[in-house]
Image (cartoon, rainbow, N blue to C red):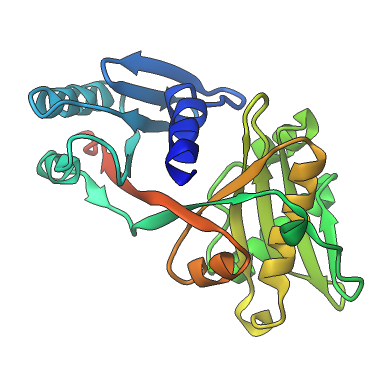
Length: 255
């Protein structure tokens, strides 16, 4: 079952990635590269014979165009030593995460807790609350363009949920809903430190899951650090594979 889900995930989300506003997908050999507004290799299936050359070609392309390139390496990607090749070419690793999946069934959806105040973002003012909650949860600002998030919400391909305590936004989570796919994605989920242990994280997972189910998705996926993985597994999420970002920045130009 999980093997079949991983194959479906690769086919729907990596080999033919859903594209939000401004993103373009380019297929080069065994790679799929996203570009604008950010550059990312989202799929790689390389042979041992050509991996070194293809990584080198991507590095040369990035240096010619400038910016930052992220290479998302999944635990089942070929070749097995791809991380070491990336490291030799100057890529720097980010923390490893686990890709988790959960079927959208009644055991997850349940009913909303009437004692919790969770609202979905619909206006620019709501986005401000979302940004406040994200910064309180993670200790740094939201890492994406808030205007693009609001545009995606307007287009129906994303939503954002905010949890309030005494009228203060203290927790938030984002839901991505790519059209024509089986999987909706849970991202940017976090709770301000002073409000942890109250069930807000799990409630935000369920709130977004209910919306995904209402929109016809069969599964939700998320990439979890070890801090949130136990909570998600208690909610019935199962690991599919690992995910690790490897980042390369173009050298600063000389002046």
